[in-house]
Image (tube, rainbow, N blue to C red):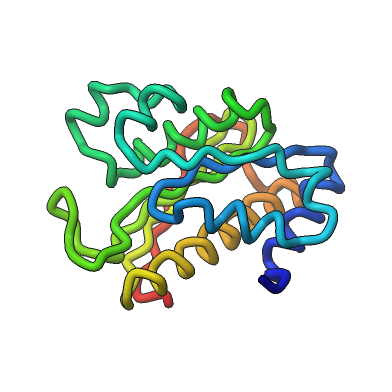
Length: 179
């Protein structure tokens, strides 16, 4: 696996501020963490990952509220946010990325393949991004990793510039047709 330039840049931003990273992954199944650890020196920033593919694991390990999962399913921005906050707690990291959605090949929980929710928990803030991705299963997973890393770098860069507020309100972005 080659070093992903956005992963390297994001780790450099976190390193510069003395922050640690963790991941909570569902549809990416460990691919996000593998991409992060492919960057030389990642071990001084990356604390680890939880691959929470099943709803029960999301609840039992990451602490995602069962009533939330019962109400909205696993493919939802609030679930991504809860996964990221759970990763912060479980992995004892400053910043956490979470991925949940439908990689395909077909729909799940009434959502078409390519529906992806990402979250970046930074301190008390949670930044959310929805992706509606084209492509086959592997392409959706890879694009989800790119999207999560892009989100992390955007949030880290905003913090470095001091342009992110301190309110714990989720910030939501939506991107369509990324591949």
